[in-house]
Amino acid sequence: MRLNTYFRERLRFLLSSIYGCLLVIFLATACHAADQPRIDSLMNEAMGRNLIAGGVVLIGNRDKILFEKAYGRLSPFPDAPPMATDTIFDVASLTKVIATTPSILKLAEEGRISLLDPITKWFPELAGKGKDAVLVMNLLTHTSGLDDIPLSSVTPMQSAIEGAAAQKLKGEVGSRFRYADLNFILLAELVRRATGAPLDLYAQVSFYRPLGMADTAFHPKETARCSGTISDERVLFGEPQDYLCRQLGGVAGHAGLFATARDLSRFCRMMLTGGTLDGRRVLARRTVDQMTAPYFSRGGTVVRGLGWDISSPFSAPRGQGFSRVSFGHTGYSGSSIWIDPATDTFVILLTSRLEYKKVHEINKLRGDISTLAAQIFGIPVEFGDMARFNDE
Image (cartoon, rainbow, N blue to C red; front, side, top):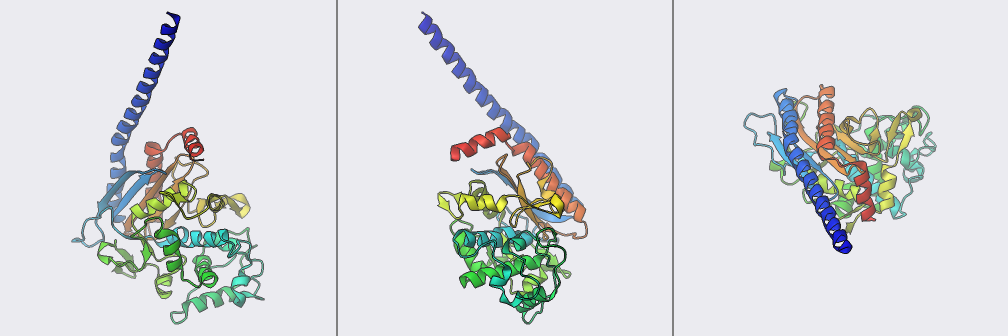
């Protein structure tokens, strides 16, 4: 009799546990469905203010896409086609973290370069020019002391190197944070010098093909699928908005990459799973950890990863709900990514930006979208820890 009572109690406990789990799943799903119109509202308001012509929002975790929706039109033209979830965007400075940074880190992982190499090892043109203390790592964290310079349209890369050699470093190397495209222009050239292959080819072979990012490339072929960007009062489709990138032939370390939100989600999922996706490893877990570890400058007030942003004046997409270990980046064209390993969440915002003087407004949109993404789709930190434990 006592044994039967024991089994009945255990059965009651199991049934109540199953019911509780199903209730949690139901409530979470209902909450997601109820809150998603708030994302629509943010995007519609941005289009109503002519901040953007349209865009794509994609939110996901290490396993799947949780939210994906297109809004508005491809460009400011009244007859522009509607935006689609597979629209290809000029992601601008996301090039730094989707192409250049992983390429440099993969070369370091393979022992072909070191992050502690003086840049004079790879750029002997800078030897004896006061740049001996600058390391590859300083280029990745924007703590080299270098500032941006104009380039020659005839010999753009040569002028970039000569300009870096000629300028006097500003502040102490490693302590002064100054966001400068020149750092990543040099890193792209470093990839070429270390491998013999240009950045676009190296990134394609090392990351985009194995990750199944079929629409990610410099020089996109399907320009009809491209969102428009505005440059010098022209609307560009499939051509980099960034002038320096165009001078460099469309392939540069700081800009020039084109991608869809779906492709970028695959890269984000790879980062959350420590360098793998669908059984394909493209980076070692320790490399991903090193890439996203904090590096402090400005007396600890600015925190960057290698290439990635963590906490700086450019961290608007972090919003109010992501953890202190989250990281991401922005692009001038109206693009941004933010990834939070603690809550197993990432958010991608790609837009056809119309107004470039309203920096505060585009940053607020980025932050508000991320705040909602964390509220609606982020999981408690302890559950994120359990997911990582199960992976290991």
